[in-house]
Image (cartoon, rainbow, N blue to C red; front, side, top):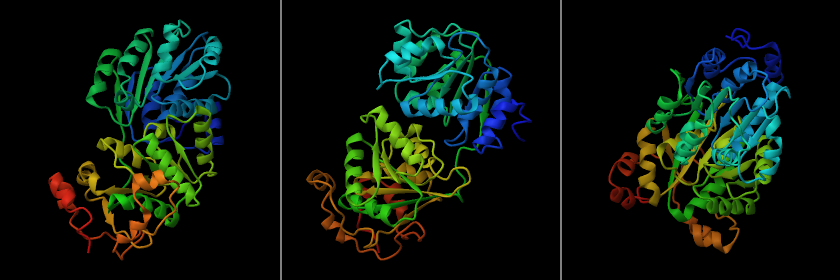
Length: 428
């Protein structure tokens, strides 16, 4: 099926073709006809499956020419808001005025532009602020979209979203697009959606495209393994996940000190810098980005060949979202986790879930070779790279090699005490 068969307008199809998009993805094929018909839709589809265009195409096509905000898209982060606005702008080609509304930037330009805004893409906090200031009026709203509903719940935005929805007309069309639909957001569906149509596409990347690996290392060795992997792996773009903003900054400094072009991406970085980093990464001017999970929500980049977990994510769904950043649009990708002995408890759910799809690799002298520390703080926090010589493993220095053959089941399925007791001492 093509876009013509989905009854998409010729001018929108032409815009898609100019972007190199000729065939709809599965979620687009399923969702576009329903949204075109004015149905409320709950669409569950994995990261990178084309959810934005699945609602953006019928939104641009169906909006009635009335004054005021006609469509409101709520997203959890600044990066995702910007990404959504850009995608809609490409297919509307200036026929509609699209504005973003989020914190971290001045509110005055958003207030000035509100009277001519057709489509508003915003984060819950700033949207609620605009409503409370009586600047944002939603009485003309035709379509409401909740994008990444699961993450808005995780970030504690549900009460804000409740308040925003109550400011909208009851006869609006409501769409919920998300990678997962946890029980906690089902009350939004029950309360605010009218006989919604449910769509669910394949939730996992094809196993033959996404390869998952992990290294089990002493804490003092993590930094060296991370840097040496970036040096040795043949990669296109690499996305490295850290659990904290401070950790992301320090890791980026060490990576940069070792001659790798890298930038950090997290909530404490200015919006202008974040947008610049995202754009440069997308165009390949930066090969490595070290990001927190929140900042990475707006990274819709198909050229990411490697995802690294420098810190083990929690909960399990975060791991799934992280690895969904690679192996997209039919390309191969690798997800590599560097697990220290004190992260065995956190990594256990990942190992148990992906037991048949994830392979443990050995650390070689090449991967544990000393690195340049950026500052004394990095040496204090992560351990001296001089101790990295303690690795005695001789096989395989990349994800192209076989597993270690150690008993990972005991390490990650047994008790926490057993896992930690065996950390770093079971290699042959």
